[in-house]
Length: 298
Image (cartoon, rainbow, N blue to C red):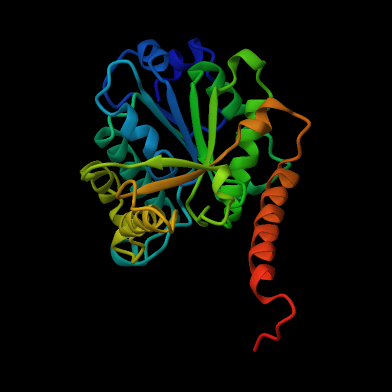
């Protein structure tokens, strides 16, 4: 971490283990100023999944730049394959190094690893992560922000979403992202009403994603083939999105538009999600009742 330079730009991070890296070797001020798309993920490799659309859009583009923020240190990763039997300290080093490699592969302008334990992120009394995220958003000022969706089933992912939302709401309106998306990891979003889905079409042969996820040997060798699973999910979305039309693309990533939550600070994130679930429930009820009302189902 280039501590003096970073502090000189107004970015003070709370953990001693935190680091700020410029994978392309740009001067810090230039790297920060070039960021247009930002992904904030819970664990090493989450940025590559929730933010892949942004990574892909910015890759080798002069007028767009991607940054990733990783909130936790990955100490709780699976112990299998090459990580079987190792301690937390070594696991943290392995996952930190893998995340650095992914940033090089994806040509990120900036990579920030905050270094928190998962339990620290989930502890609502700990306000330090909120401070860090707000400071990062003030400095980077991304136009587009990707993070975990609030209906994700992983508790740490949901905690990160909540902290990102709090950080964005803590900014003046003019500094807030112009687009904000909650993306899929530990739960699909195909249950949402079609008119509410944000659809990202991923066209063409995609070697970049394979290269990005391929650096996470600690996960792949441990039996978690996130690379295969994500591509399978995206292919399934492309085919099953519309039963009446040919596939419009080979792969589709879905996201939840989070802009209503940062355009109205009084809006409850809980009610925001529950209303979507209620609309899903009502669509299932209406469709089903149209055919089985009055019948006995066995």
